[in-house]
Image (tube, rainbow, N blue to C red; front, side):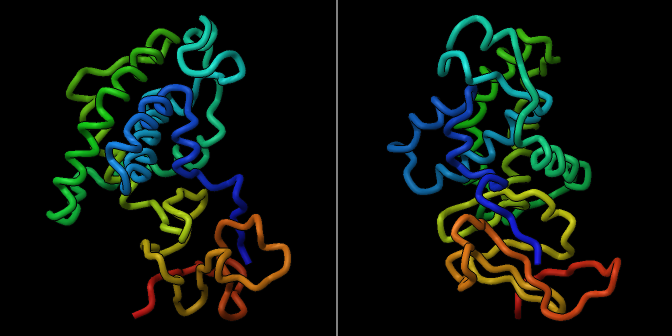
Length: 220
């Protein structure tokens, strides 16, 4: 059995707490309502790429803090997840999403773009390479495509999880995932003692041979 604990789950709360994008995203909560969680995760994904998977330290002063917040950057605790997700962007150069989702992505990009522009300027002041306006827009839109491709909807809301890209034929749903050899279940569906801090479980449905690919897909 493979388990992801809560501290391994990148949630909207983590995006809202980010030093660069969190404050601006929180301002949109009452204006956007349901759906801001997805915008938050996509915006955070964009910020991770723009900052080269680093972040400003939050041990000094919250948003806008002292000079060290702008001149010092540290490795992001989420880089294992976000670098793996951005590696998938190479395969998605011609990625098309459902046509009815494009207007929603456009709205999200409109919200995220000025936030990520400010993030890029702060990162540039710390020595990170800048982007043109066109490059920044492409990165922002790709962040939304990647969010749609990689997010998993738990009953508590959307999350991003490490190592899911290693599981074959993965696709999102609020229901359990089932396949010939594995199943996903959320903690609300688990009866096991001590599962309170578990975000998601992947359980083998039969004995697996050494080296066998774990294949997880939605049931028909």
